[in-house]
Amino acid sequence: MTDEKKTTNAIGLTRQEYQGSPSTLCKGCGHNAIVNQLIQACYELDLRPEDIVKFSGIGCSSKAPTYLLRNSFGFNGLHGRMPSLALGALFADRTLLGLGMSGDGDTASIGMSQFKHICRRNPPMLYIVANNGVYGLTKGQFSATTEPGVRFKRQGTSRYQPVDICLEALASNASFVARSFAGDPKQMRSLFKAAFRHKGIAVIDIISPCVSFFNFAQSLHSYEYGMQHEIPLHELEFVPNENTPLVLKDFEKGTVREVQLHDKSSIRLKKLDKDYDPTNRWEAFKMLQEAEEKRLMVTGLIYLDPDPPLIFDRYNLVEEPLNRLPEERLRPSRESLEALNRSMM
Ligand SMILES: Cc1ncc(C[n+]2csc(CCOP(=O)(O)OP(=O)(O)O)c2C)c(N)n1
Ligand code: SF4
Ligand SMILES: [Mg+2]
Image: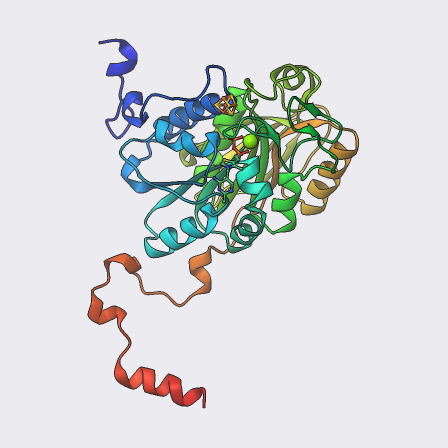
């Protein structure tokens, strides 16, 4: 046995035990790089696979949950309908943590309305959009995130302004919004760890090149463009709770900002070029708008509300998960139904 196979984390699991079936995606596909970092983040965070529930829609990106966490529950839904599936399942069992994986077609084309509504509801879930700017599974049609002017072999040219997934998430009140690049494994891993610890939905838009249909050097979704043009907002590090001070620290001599999450773990952000405060929603809008105008690939933690209400906090729910309640406790009594009917007369 190799050392990696023997080494276990704090709950006694090896990295291998976080893997799934072998990938059937193309060699070099960005989605594979995302899966690898998800496996690593879950392993390093000591998450129990049985406490995670995976969701996806349709697309190469939506196949990806099969390649990790073989012992987790998983639901593969209809194209663009992952959010309603996820909300239902997470509402039924609120001991679980959601991991959703979708594509730019699945989220920003057919699934846009569902996406916006799950953002505003804030369930406990990491929602990844593996954004390659193309429909990969159906062999290369342009999607809602393709930049205008690009010529595809068979589909012609995309004519419209692209949808910015981070802007849409922010406008829909998502409580954690980030962008990353499949060619930047360290940043992805830190963001995934922070996202798993976040209280609510964490939307991460990951530029994830499709090497078979849209990896042209001039495309904003290619490896070459990302490698040459990625502009990280900051250097990110996730700090587990035991080392974290209880206050929100500001820049220390203009270099490091620590943003604390609700469980007292934190994200340490090392300033690179400019000061950037990810807890300021207006600053996030402005930054995204400027990046879009100048066609910049800005990555990092874009927005964070460290302690937002979860969807469950807005309902008067019993303590136990709904899926464990016996039928007699789920069924309203005859008297309560009659009272309800009377109240509506
Ligand atoms: C209702 C419906 N419409 C269309 C399709 C065909 N279809 C399957 S995957 C897909 C696009 C997937 O693109 P994306 O979500 O970007 O995933 P990728 O393959 O690029 O990772 C489409 C249009 C479908 N399966 N269901
Ligand atoms: S077609 Fe594109 S998106 Fe699909 S697996 Fe291949 S490289 Fe990845
Ligand atoms: Mg796609």
